[in-house]
View: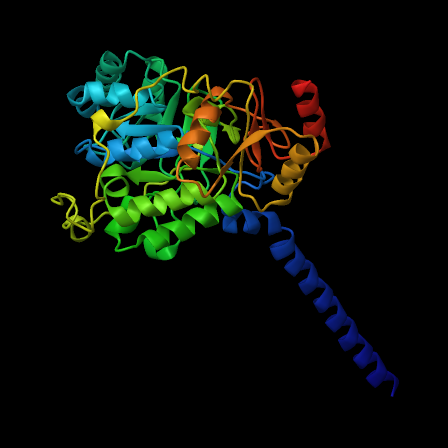
Length: 426
């Protein structure tokens, strides 16, 4: 009996020892190296910065054919006081110099572009030579320093940033790296910032920029892009929608989509310098992710490259260059600003109704402009041109009503705005 018990005790002891050894090995092999396994599986996340109540945005235009859609698109932007940048070659700019100068006076800047091929892996000497030509050609027309360069697909690499720095150009473009969110990288080893353009996330249209052309070439409809635009400004704090203006500014369904988006979704539209002022990431250039997806096959492009605006219905009266408004620094008529208070609103929001009640109770006469009025956008643009920022609830016209006096502008309505208005009117 004793020998049997001893034998069982030895067997049990060996089993326990084996289990302990196995457990220790498992922990060392898998748990001890867990950080290594996680790093292997890790992907670069979309930035998780705090979401702003109103996202920042910049409209990016592309044109290399003619001025028909471009002039129409720029006119629509100007009526809404939305700044933009135009990706264009120096040859296109020089060929249409007077028209381009007129558009730059309306709030459009130029992205100097090389459209023959993306800049990926092109030797430094070749990039430097081409970017020098781009800079000289565009500046000869506009008379203004060129601030940003890129190439086909918004592509760039380290040779691009080296050439830009050598030529005194502060920004370059890059193909999108964070989905529909636009991202600004500040390389620690250069004095040039990188603008990573918004890219499509929806699988059916993936790898194109958030651009009407990307959807159009893939058989998409304006409603497809509208859905992604709304999703982008809902989820992210920074977006750069793109339009090939021979589509977005010429085809009726597409320009209507753009106008509906601009007029019904709040975006704090920024100029190039304003958008690039705050970086999202600071890191060595070699750590900045690159996106080199550009799956434009011959089959995809065969109905596009030879197209002469034949796909879809053209807008009835596209704005010709000569129809673009002339810039007048005195945009607001003296009759309109003669101590008159103007309130732009939707006549339904609680702050709009509170403001109306305030003016009525204090016997203050105002002029009301509703967002359903035909001249709403053009009228508002004049006042925003005089007062680029607002006081009150929002500094960037993020909340109705918009109230303009002779010397101030206010966005939203609360007790603080009441007090400021009463003090100003006295």
